[in-house]
Image 1 (cartoon, rainbow, N blue to C red):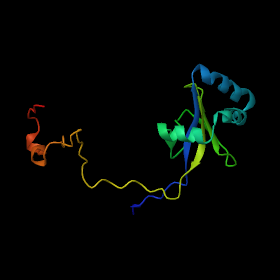
Image 2 (spheres, rainbow, N blue to C red; image 1 turned 120 degrees about the vertical axis):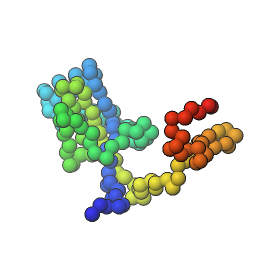
Image 3 (tube, rainbow, N blue to C red; image 1 turned 180 degrees about the horizontal axis):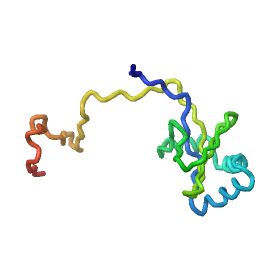
Image 4 (cartoon, rainbow, N blue to C red; image 1 turned 90 degrees about the horizontal axis):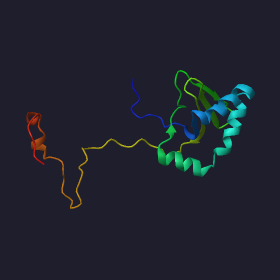
Length: 143
């Protein structure tokens, strides 16, 4: 019934540029005057290839699906690796690029046990198992 091993996505979306407020006003006007395809093409000049990809991966701006809310308009063209999302209500414009996932992608395995945090001297700072019992809930602990 449930898939125990999720299929890896073929591609993900990375953020190329996100503009909001006054910065987005010019682009929202461009969309009104010339259409979203022109705005998408204009924003593509902020895509610096691997540098953009590395920055998105480093900063966590990578998505399984195009991030969009209920007030957003999303323009995606199958012939283009780019997608444009914008919201007049919240005054923002975003350009995303499709990013292929490496074939060796696998979900991270679930940890077998709770990891221990160790101090500089290698001591385990978690309480011993006997002291983590629910019967100890609410007792004062001195550190």
